[in-house]
Image 1 (tube, rainbow, N blue to C red):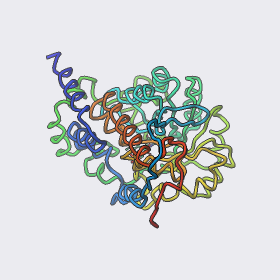
Image 2 (image 1 turned 90 degrees about the horizontal axis):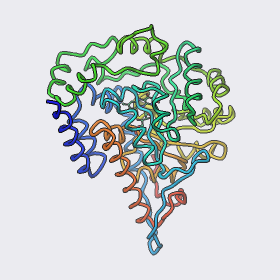
Image 3 (image 1 turned 90 degrees about the vertical axis):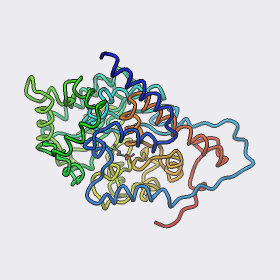
Image 4 (image 1 turned 135 degrees about the vertical axis):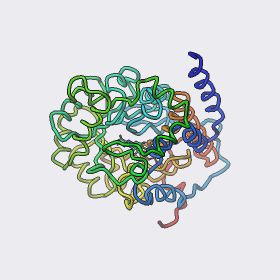
Length: 397
Ligand SMILES: Cc1cc2nc3c(=O)[nH]c(=O)nc-3n(C[C@H](O)[C@H](O)[C@H](O)COP(=O)(O)O)c2cc1C
């Protein structure tokens, strides 16, 4: 009996090594998870145009190789905020990870630490800031979902600073909850009441169910525990979080958070050049050009389509970073050619973690690293840092 979960985990780990690409990890995650969970990860909103745009944006760019170059040694390391990272991509914040893989937040943090890349803990994480700082003191950043009550945001910022985290990421593209139709159909929206078919379908994923029950059911959105009523359970804490977020944020609040946070400050979710300029003028250190992986505004532009323009406008003042739609190493190379100082992956690493825990997250990183390495060699550009627009042949969007 006690051996059951261990055997299942070992089997998952074995399969993880067989994953050749991110799509393989995606399929493994899909098999492991109940539909309600997989849909939460996979879904966009409304017609899911945003997800399709993110993908098609990459296909408009081709990489032009230069041969007869010595590529016997390749280097992907890159500097961001004065720190040398081994790879040009890190892990974007994703909420509720514990629902897909118990302890998954810290598994991703450890995988990032081992690979020497940043890990951004979500404002809706299922582990605490303090625990992330413990396992990955040099690599963990924190993403703030600002609360309606300023005192809560202030306290979360203080905790992240006290824990020694280097970077605070303010997500600005969630002024309200978006219309995620998969979640609505599954009953995975407030008030949470899963549909009968979602519950029955979940029962066909015994490994996931066993893990869920073994850990006492719903995971806790840990960072919010201190602000909910004393002794609140996971459901009550989730309910409390939904009374505090999403909250309306303006430039005034951004200025306040900037002033409160003593270290590197990043704004995530910027898509308009004027917003990028204004944020730069307010003294932010970095911008993440992102459409939240196509999860907030279905008709938003693909971040890749505005990246070059934003980089040209503010790239000399702030670190312009990128996420949304990364599934291949070549996507990361293309984003770099269009000016991304650094790139983040959301679903790619989350599929790995959901499918196989820490080894799965590490596998996703290795797959992308290996793909980048091959692309650099094939391009005749052995140093990632040397990539730029000259390597691209682009069609008009
Ligand atoms: C399941 C899931 C949960 C997410 N949770 C958050 C979050 O808590 N905070 C946030 O800023 N972004 C969140 N995002 C968006 C990611 O940080 C990132 O912008 C997006 O996943 C990038 O697109 P990609 O998944 O195509 O790589 C989430 C994305 C997914 C897929």
